[in-house]
Amino acid sequence: MFWPLVKITLFIVIVGTFSAGLALLMNINGTVTFELFDLAIQTDLINLVLLLLILIPILWGMYFLVGLCIAIIRFIVGDETAFTRYLNKNKTRKGFQALADSMVALASGEPALAKSKINLAEKYLKQPELTGLLAAQTAERMGDTAKAQEVYKQLLQNQKTRFIGVAGILKHRLENNDTSTALKLAEKAHQLRPHHEETLNILFKLQAQSQDWIGAEKTLKAKFSRNQFDRKDYKHHRAVILFAQANLELSQDNSRLAKSKIFEANNLAPDLIPAAILAAQFKVEGNDKKAATRVLMNAWNLLQHPDIVSAYSEIEPNESLQERYKRFKKIINKTLTHSESRMAMAELAISRHDFVGARRELETLPDTDPTVRTYLILAAIERGIGAEEGKVQTLLAKALTAANGPQWVCNTCQYVHENWEPICSNCQDFDSIWWQRNDKANQKLVSSIKLLPMRNDDDNSKGDLEEQVKPDEIIRADEITEISDN
Image 1 (cartoon, rainbow, N blue to C red):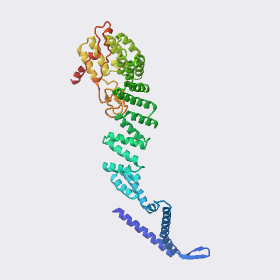
Image 2: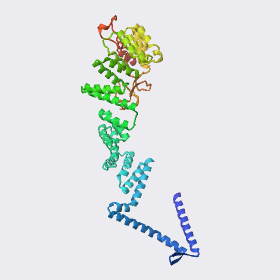
Image 3: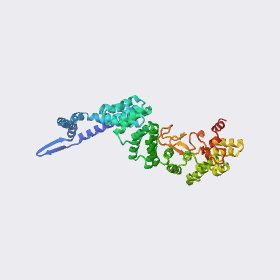
Image 4: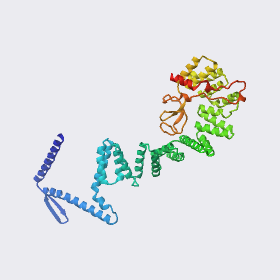
């Protein structure tokens, strides 16, 4: 009600001002003289004003006719769209205004208004390369995925907008978990825009998930050339891909190619534990135990993992327990104070029936780093010494509530894996699983934390021992399960 009153008031003020001005001009006496060469023209001031008012539309008409003549001349000399462009100039202005309004409406969270404005822009401009993407985004915001897909398909017809169309359809295929189609679309998008960062990321992830490791390696190189990560990360990612390729070759009985890829992976990332262990096994098969020892020692010095100790023990399967003890002193030489070194030596002592020595090897570890595995080793020691069963059960119960210790944890989703994998089985992220401590991890794999089998099954190497002690038999998994159930 207020706004119409304001408009009426403004209209009356404007008319009144114009009338007052016109009356003032009529009351002014005098003439205006125009001289051009010998010609002199005299007129009243009011007549001059009226003449100027009449000349304005005449001049505008002349301007229009001159522009029209220029457009016709351009059309004649070969510019086929000059004539229609000139006639549609007003439509173009309205179209761009509608396009701008639709952008503002979409950004403001008004998809319905954006849709009406984009329809006007499409009507006036008839340029899908300008309006297509906005129309698709508006349809998506309104939940009309069918319309969005239709618009993206239309964009495929134009060379300028083909990449936008492919990228839009790719996004919808990913949302529908159609990874096979999405992979083909990502490859096409990469062909259209080889250096598009988001496309490279999507393509690499899809190739890794589909185990297209050759394609993933090419995409990884393209990502590195775009400086998406530093050289250290690139080398580790490539080592993971080579390891996956080697496993694929092994499944096809192509051990020769698998070996070359594993050795290259180990050179690129010595701390990639699965690759180091497999490389050491290949070296042992080739009767190069020194090289196998060197590979495992390098890996151990970078990352202390119990699987390395297990692989190290398998290099000399026929050695005596005393020889094994001396040999293990070499691998832990640079990591004497690390908890894994202390537990490895304690388990070796258990295998020699030296339970007092095993407790001594643990030193203060039960107090400074009480983990699940620490309590399991303590329980094995107490049972070996002959302690009361209640004390053993108490240690096993403590193991259930103790800290996890290092586990294979995904950096992205914190999911715990029993074994290392190139891709997280929970979030599908590549090279995200690391051996680490994480109190926020979503689970504790007690059943997978076993005492290392530091034993020798050769009867001729038993020495004076009557029986080889198997640490993973001293504490059975079913005992832990029984306590957990209770």
